[in-house]
Every structure is written in C-alpha cells, then in structure tokens.
Length: 216
Image 1 (cartoon, rainbow, N blue to C red):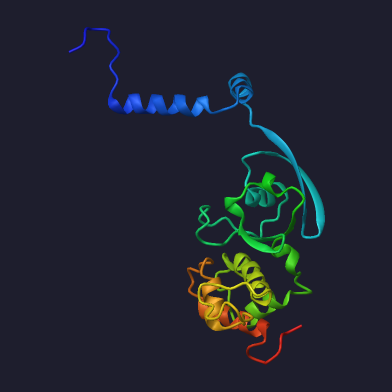
Image 2 (cartoon, helix red, strand yellow; image 1 turned 90 degrees about the vertical axis):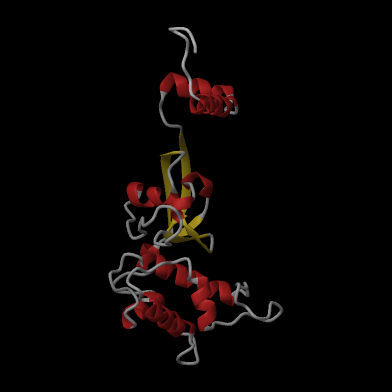
C-alpha cells in the first residue's frame, strides 16, 4: 500500500504514457515545437490536373484525395462509402490506374492526371461505359455507380494492357476479357443492391463480348 498522496497509476496508464512519449520522440523537433506553439494544421499547396483542368489547392496535409475533390472542388460524384477502402465507391482514375481516393492523401498526387466520374462523360455525351450501365440497369440506387463505372473503365484498360489477375490462366499469353476476369477485377467495388450481373453485362458490352467488336 502506498502512502496518501502517492501517484496511483495502473499498468494501462504506464503503458499509455510510455507509448505517447515514444511517439513524441520520433517527431522532428521543429514539428513538435510548431504543434505545441500554434495547434494549427500543417498546410501545403498541391496542384494536379483533374478532369482535364489544372487545379491548385492549399490543403491540410491530412486531407484525402476524396475530400479534396468533394469538399474543395465540389466534385461530388465520387462517393464516400465506408471511408476505409473496402467498398470502392470513391474509386478515381489517377495516372491511368484506379485507386481508392479515401485512402490516399491529396498531397501525394502532385502533378497527377486525375479522372473522376464527372470527367468521363456528360448527360448529352455519355461515356460508353455510362451508356451501357443505363442500358443494362447496372446502377439501381446509384450510390456506388460512379466508382463502379470508373473502375470498369480502368479494368478494361488493364486487360487490354496485358496486366494479369488472380484468375488469369496463362501468364505468358495476352489477357482477354472474360466474365471471370471482369468479376475478379471488379470484386473491390461493392453493390448493396446486388446489381453485379447487370454490371458484368454492361462491361461485356463495352468490351465487345456481345457483339464481337468493341463499341465506339
């Protein structure tokens, strides 16, 4: 038993204090001093081309690419679903590759070429993938659709570029569009409405599987 007035710390308190001290010791001295003195977020200027337009933003360095697009550029087509990179609703195409925009910081994409759903097509001039989704009813509630369409466009480009997937049978041959390839590559884009079969049909049409040729 300790004497009255002695510091009473549990094992959890000791561990938490030691962890906090260790984390603080890894910060540069300048960062520690600035954080303690101001308590303000660290800002950085980032510029990139999004949907063909060069944009420059001053952002908190913790801002995700998704929040930069939605909150700062008002490009709200890309949706915030799980915000953990598990649903694919936030999918964008960055430098030709699809990414979960909620998991990447905007400042990591200085000079990048970014395409969101707004950059694929407009109501009077739809992208072929958008038009196919409409024809095959691949959207239903529509919340996940922007990410599905962006991912679908990137998936067909991946296959055309010869990038294999987990279900590619022959790694030495040119990859081809099959239903199995589409389903495997689109597995990271979830649809709670269950429109998967319609999405596969839409992508198959764009890839030319139903007509024997790729749609213009």
